[in-house]
Image (cartoon, rainbow, N blue to C red):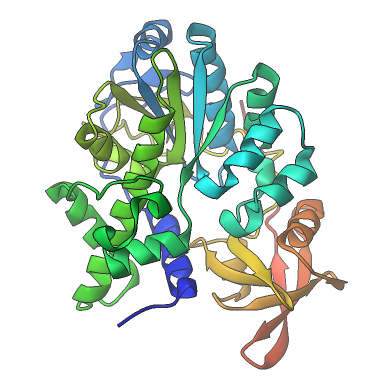
Length: 385
């Protein structure tokens, strides 16, 4: 059965969201101290020695949960530290497909302002997460004239590769990306467990499609990293942590492409005092859960895309404001706080203005029925240093 491009876009959104929510096995032996680097298992890692070592790698991969401001701040600080060792740096972005490369080049060259860049890159339809999460990193690259590279491919191309097969899609149309290496057994098992949490466990066809989509995604990003790597550059990839954990996803595809001098770094919340499990990453940086969230903008926790009548909800995070308010995938948000929405940026602007602990009325279209939904934003909680 052939599926529509919108089906594959929804699958891509679901893959992204499910991997963000993937659980990690842990063991509670000692409590990592926020503000320090740790090895898997819990041994503290000297930061200066770690960065000196990483400066000799070809590729360094920085994981993230896409909607977490503290993860992106950690990435920015880590990028600055790596840049001090290797100013000949390139930053690869999962967030945008290859087609957005001209917009990235123009941004780094100072030819576009923020609004112009978001429009030229088609940020909202390509990614959907609040650009405010990423703009400090983008400004860092622009200030330092660090090249930015789009690592991803569109859901439409992923769909063609899954439906038609790699040989049926000409190399030029897939940007020269080769077929992925098979998933490692542990990776396949982890993906199957994630899929089973959110789908019918007897749907073997759906599971295979889910795994195939993940492998296309991993391979595309690995190929982009390899292409960006020159004789002297250090390539740093900003990628969702589900693609990186245990060297299963993108790192495995890098190995298959002949680039083995890579390392994965991950942020590690220590709210429940668990040390990072063995094999998770080269190193993790510990931070106090929620300690840097006090001034983060309000978020609904949804992925949206433009729609003729407003903006369409194409995915949402478990436990998010959107989910608790009763929003569903496929809903079209027509108005927010009485204001007509014409593009995702309109909704982002209104949500960011929302004070903590207040309600935002949303007028939505679900099927043929218009209704109102009240999004309740949580009050800020005070955290101690």
